[in-house]
Amino acid sequence: MSVRNALVGWTILLVSSAAVAQHSGHPSPSPTPAEGSGSKTEQPPMTHAPAGEHQNPDMMAAMEEMKPMDHWMTMLHGYAFLTANRQGGPSGNREFESQNHLMLMAIRRAWGGKLSLLGTFTLEPATIPVQGSAELFERGETYKKVLLVDRQHPHDLFVQLAAAWEKELARSTRLRLYLAPVGEPALGPVPYPHRLSASENPSAPLSHHNQDSTHISYDVASAAVAAGPATFEASAFHGQEPDENRWNIEAGAIDSYSGRVTVRPIPELALQISSGHLEHPEAIEEGNQTRSTASITYQKATPRGFIAVSAISGRNKTPEGPEWGNLLEWTWKFADSNFVYGRIESVDRDLYELRFKRQRPAGTPRARTMVQAGTIGYVRDVPLLSEAETGVGGDIGVYRFNSRLDPVYGRHPVSFHVFFRIRFSAPKMNHGGHMQMGSGS
Image 1 (cartoon, rainbow, N blue to C red):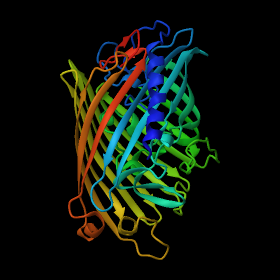
Image 2: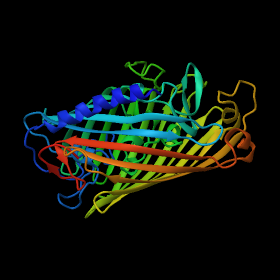
Image 3: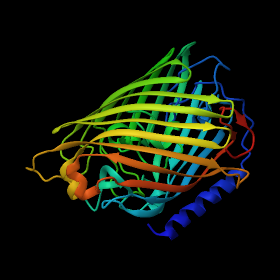
Image 4: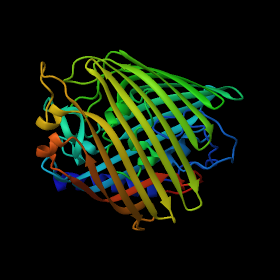
């Protein structure tokens, strides 16, 4: 990854941040809890709680919870990491890169309900190496038609382009319709780039392709009904994952489907189960998949921060058998400016892929192995920009794996990240989920 590309991407992001500082928007009421759309946020769609009962520490979810008015209200949220990445051992690498996302939303009253226009974008095709960010034991998607191993692919420029409409049918029942040439079907937990429990961690989970990789899907149509604390969703979409061209919008036949149930017994706790049929999701892997996931998420605002914890399990049923990916992750903000985050994972991997860094040839017997990984990190906010939240941080990662992989990975590889992080939004949201007119985060 060239330093120039990363700096170009950061220049664009900082210009966006400056534009946010000039954004005034329309005056809007404080958000009422749990009226979100469920897209890319920890708040499940349309699950209600009495006003004032809790504060939502997830800024993007709080924006989605806003009630519409008779004119367009626009909102923006973005973040970026400028990261020095060092992956240890013989299979590791050292890089300078940037993980980043920009999320836009416009809402208003329409047709007796709430209309939302949703856009999510990233400059990762320019700020992450084309072959992906170095990450030990990661796998998924391709580069030059070769399976990516020990690499996390960059996300596509267009992460989400969608429209959603929701309407209250009765006092505790709501309907939501969602259409997206690029978007997220009802499958899996909240994607890690938008999960509060992962918000300070620049790395993708090793279990990403067992749990939430469908967050960039094409030709998505979804319907949801919320009744009391439960939300029931169904989706149809194109099942193949994005190709190696990260700058375009792809399309294909609607050939896959999924369903998801989310229950929120109390405002701070969300329980999710989902399953879906994916038609030929992998470019170089034959066959279809059935993905099933379950997750428990707890997040709560505290007087000077928040706590967010997610436990997620995902399984891909493939023609060659099941593949599991499980994780526990957390982010704790305390004393206004301090963050402690971590992640513990256990994933299934193929010994051949890890040894030779390519797809196992047809006819070669399958040999599965379990890899475990742990990460712990710390971030300290540093007040550099008045209209954005900036911080410096770092983390350390360690692994446990089959000793047959010692010649490839070393006996005890250790990985590090050191980074600068920026986050901004407009209108301004504090970590209690309340709007402050102005900009910044």
